[in-house]
Image (cartoon, rainbow, N blue to C red):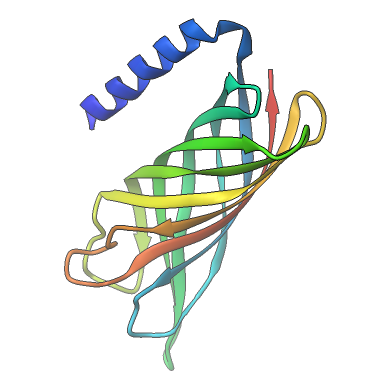
Length: 180
C-alpha cells in the first residue's frame, strides 16, 4: 500500500512540474447511494457520504486528469423477518479520473479507483470484509463557475467484498466541489 501511494505522489509531482500553470487543488463532498451485487439475499441501498481533496491537472486543451483522495462510506442494508440490518464500510479511496472536455462546462470522467477499508459497521455478517477494494468509475462533470463544479459518478465494484462470496460494491455518487 505504501509503494502505491508513494508512486502516485511521485507521478503527481512530475505531472505538476510539467504543467504547473494548469494545476488546481480543491475539495469535494457529496452523497453516496450504495448497494452490493452478487448477494444471495435481497439487499437495499443505503445513503451515505463521501468527502476529500482533489487536484485538476490540465493535460491538453480538451483533456485533464483528476486524482482524488476521499473518505467514502459504502455498503447495503438487509431485511429479514426478524430485523433490519445495515452493513457500512468506510474506505479511503483514490480515484484517478481522466476527464474528456465535451464542452467548456461538461466533462466525461472515467478511470480506476482503489480503496482501503478503514472501518466496518457490520451487524449482519460475521465474516470480515477484505481490506482492499477496486472499482471502475464513469460519470459526468459540470463546471458551474471557474472554481465550483458538480459531478455524478457510477462506481462498479471489481473485487469481492469477502473472501468466500461474490458480493461487490456498487455506488452512485453526487458531488459538489470547489477548486482554489
